[in-house]
Length: 55
Image (cartoon, rainbow, N blue to C red; front, side):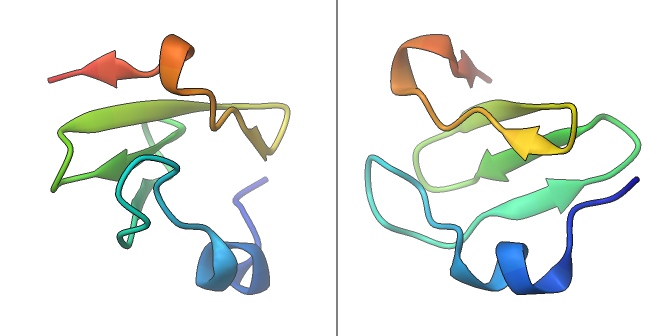
C-alpha cells in the first residue's frame, strides 16, 4: 500500500527540512538536496538519519 498523500505533504527531510520524493516501486523517500534515501517499512517512513542510505 502506498503512502498517503496527506503524509507525503507533511514529510520533510530531518537534516535540511527540504521536500522529499517518494518512490513507491523502491519503497523509499529521497532527499535530493542531502542525497539521502530513507526506507519505508510497513508503510511507515524510517526517518532516522543514521539509517538513511547515501547515494
